[in-house]
Length: 206
Image (cartoon, rainbow, N blue to C red; front, side, top):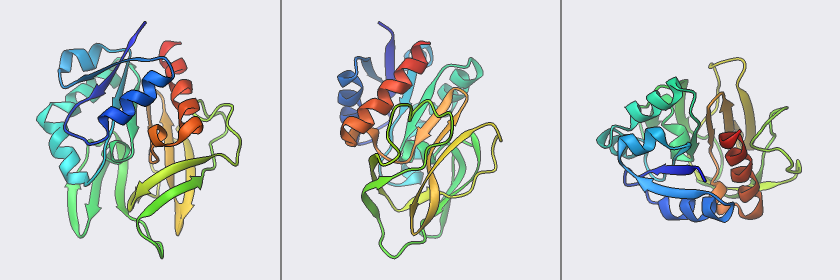
C-alpha cells in the first residue's frame, strides 16, 4: 500500500486529518522529513490558525521546497484550510501582509460577510469534471471554519474551481493538475469529506 505523508510543521489538525485518511484506507505517516514527504505517494498540507504562523512553520521544515519538488515531479499534493490559503502568493490578515508559497497567483483576504467567522456547514458548487467531488450530490454540505479566503482566481484557465458563498463567493476548492486544495475541512465533514478524500486517494493511485 502506498503511503500518504502529512506534513508535520506544527499545525493543530494533524491527527484528525490522519484519522480521516486512515478511515478511507490510506496508510499515513506524519512527517517533517523532506525525503519522506517528497517520496510519498501523496502529500497533505493541513493548516489551522493564522496565515503567517502557518507559513513560518512550513518554512521551518523546508516545506516550500518539498511542495515545489513534488509538483515538479507531478506528485499529488492536497492542501486543507489554511493549507490551501498558503498556496497563494500572499495573505492579508488584520492589515498585515504575509508571503505565501506562491504556487498560485493571488491574495487571501478577509471575507466580506455580516457574520465572521464562516463556521459550520455549507454547500459548494463543484466544477464540471471535478475529481474531488465525483459522486457527491449538489446539495452536499461540507464543514468550514475560516474568516479569510481566496475570492478571485487568476491562475491556470485549466484549473477546476469549486466555489461557495458566505457573504460573497469564494474558492472552496481548486484542482490544478497534481495540486489540489479545499478551504473546508474534509476531515470534519463526515461521510461527504470521506468520499472526497477517497476520491483524492484514487487519483493518487491512478
